[in-house]
Image 1 (cartoon, helix red, strand yellow):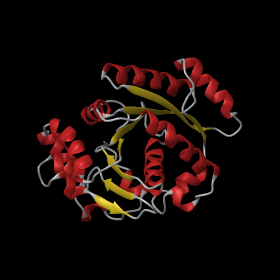
Image 2 (cartoon, rainbow, N blue to C red; image 1 turned 90 degrees about the horizontal axis):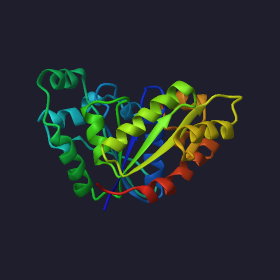
Image 3 (cartoon, rainbow, N blue to C red; image 1 turned 180 degrees about the horizontal axis):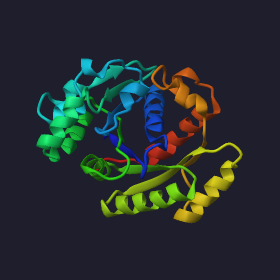
Length: 251
């Protein structure tokens, strides 16, 4: 039974997509069958992070939602050491989002697509990277997940937004929620950032991750976990995996 984990944030710029991509890579390299679905049709990022090239050369989630293909036709198989790694990019070209805005789509197709991917690919883990804030794709992804990891920066503004997000996930019935504090600025002790988050939410965060400029430099060329496998930040990503999978489940 696949474990479904949604990565979400209240605002953009939290590093949510980068964390999701690196976690997918590391989970697969540990021997699992993992798929990452980029559900952020408005602002897709996963294909850039994995450096898959021109997204116009393949099918996408948007193509599936508007009836151009089956969801499995949008799957890209990526190299992995040990397991299997698959990517479903959000959209291949601007026309995909234009058609979705103009025509809409049956939101039930998204959940059906998640279920079909887990079955057809025989997945151990399905990671869902969402759009920041709230839209149809985000609500479906969160409602489909066994665990929702809310990614926030450590500033008071973002922490307040994360609180709204956690309330939103509760309303959608997400059974398990966890907090990841990311991009802690230089000079701010990680312990202090974690205590601030714990005071705001009443529980310690799953991880407190420092700002790492090399993450941005690697994007689009090589995934950070591939380019810097021995970096302390990659070690932090690895340490998150057991807790996420222990909490995970299929809705």
